[in-house]
Length: 577
Image 1 (cartoon, rainbow, N blue to C red):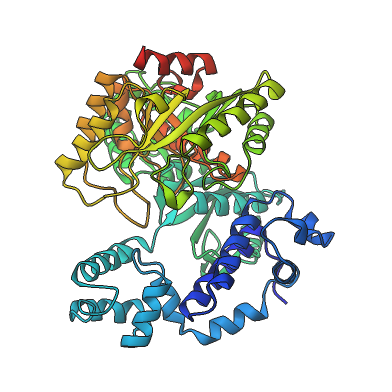
Image 2 (cartoon, rainbow, N blue to C red; image 1 turned 135 degrees about the horizontal axis):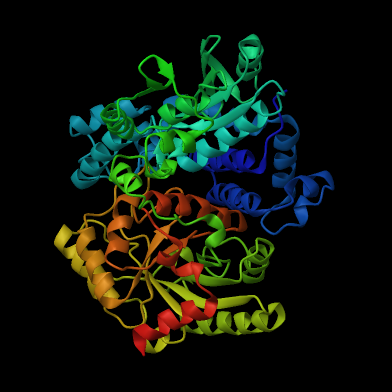
């Protein structure tokens, strides 16, 4: 019997079953039932309790048969129906679903018509021009698939920060139960809050006599799928999630130096070593030395102090001016998660979200926020059940009622309004004037030239009712690059027009990119750290957005939703007053 699954894992299996059913040409109603059930399961805060009471069937979207499947998955970790589907489809076929533009229907055609059952075979077929005349494909689709395969290969060894950070924290939590461990921390690019990472680096300090026991404990954790290498001071494992994790153990006096060294970046470390040499010192993962003498440091702060500089937060260690700033004591006080007073940009079940407005509002209240801006999709987003004028007025009436009942918490009326191909907006000004805030985003026509895409966005921002530009480049990390865009010109236009730019904190986006955040604040553009949440759990994604903001040297004063609700409203009003 396998270990019990959580709701995220259960939902993933149901989604996979929906894909398998569609590939096999099964009843579309059965496919949608599994897709809907997966979406519902992900949004349930009390799945275990519902299953324990056999009450899951009372949840809308979950029938009796589906409730039994979920219970079986939760209790046994596997489902016979899932296994039977997997046996009917060659293993490589499922991998093809990871290629953007290759959905279940296309996979079925490729399998049946050309006997293509792997990404390698798909790539070969494209290179031989076999898809150009295939029904439902064509030359342009073939070119896109070939390009997306190359991108997939480039990205598949990397992992989203959300997946890696969760896995790393679970490892640290487990290791911290060992009393013989003195200090334990996450290092590497994950500590620097890079948007994607290759692996997990962990650093532990402990006495030499305890190292073997610690390593035995580490490689035996339930999260470990396989052991790549096991030693007394270093071990490498592959987790069940597919992420590789390294553990290094040193004595406590070496801990600050190894933590700094493994945190990186390599460029930062090289520059810091050069600075140390100018002071007649030598720094390495083993210590800070003056000649043969090791200069003790209790922590990284003391290490930087002995190098004559201000402490450099891990997020800034990219050799992009942080050493010079630290020497001049000009490292800013970076924004903290606790600085956010409100949540902007969430979706509810009015469009493509899972939860109601009240559920999202109460979840924000429980987390200590003062306000929430509901930003469901506009009417052009038919795929996301976008709102028309009539439904907008109905939603606003519900918000008015909730504001009366939930005071002093405040729900702001917002919309994520589509930017059309010509830069116009999905609603006329008389509809946009109904909202407290207007977020504008591109959701279609990604294949423009850089000049066309840039002018499209600038024209949209020129509308006086626009408050925030949403996910500026449209990128999806590890899936697709953003559309071609002159980000500098967009930022300069936002500064001129008084439009804020979103740092979309969804870990699949993290857009605006951290490299452009610094340019934005230098130009005086306000940023807004938004989760783009489609369910309650998505609210926590603001943490990843804060990490990106910190990498971009962003301070509290630079971020729109560190302000009160009234200050945010004034910012919006100033645009169209």
